[in-house]
Length: 178
Ligand code: PRP
Image (spheres, rainbow, N blue to C red):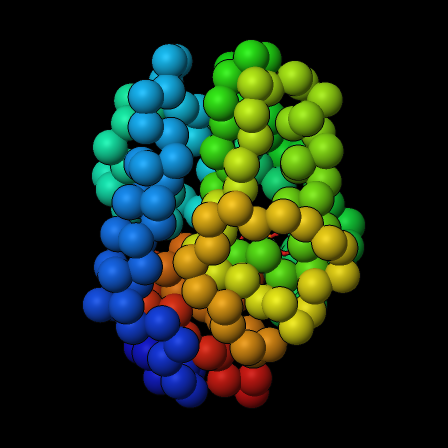
């Protein structure tokens, strides 16, 4: 059982629901009256579960697209080496874009993607993350819609992995380092 390797729960299922509802409401208010559909861009693979929950709480017309980046390899420490594995399918020029992450840790991934997407001339670009680890931040980035701050522990579940596993846990937990 995967649960046997979890030492504690950081964000329980009911807390996740509350956080996602709040974020959806904040985003809905912010983009109220938007003239073209909001483009919600998820960074794979980590954000897939949060994205699915979040877009169902946003009550403005929207479209979704995804981008795959990789920064960690299979280890638990960020390598700083970020690759674009799969780019967006659609143009973001002139569009209102909301970039969605499962977690911001060092901030390198978000910073790189933000730079990349700004060069494509969106009308606006805002950021949303479910988890935020302020203690390990190395690059200063702006988070417009933030779910919850967590301490510097290795979090898995609700989309977050260790060696591609644990993404399917319905809560966010800390993995036993052994
Ligand atoms: C994780 C996470 C973020 C990034 C955050 O991705 O999903 O994209 O690391 O770390 P940073 O702020 O230090 O850059 P990962 O490369 O593990 O891929 P995944 O989305 O497939 O889990």
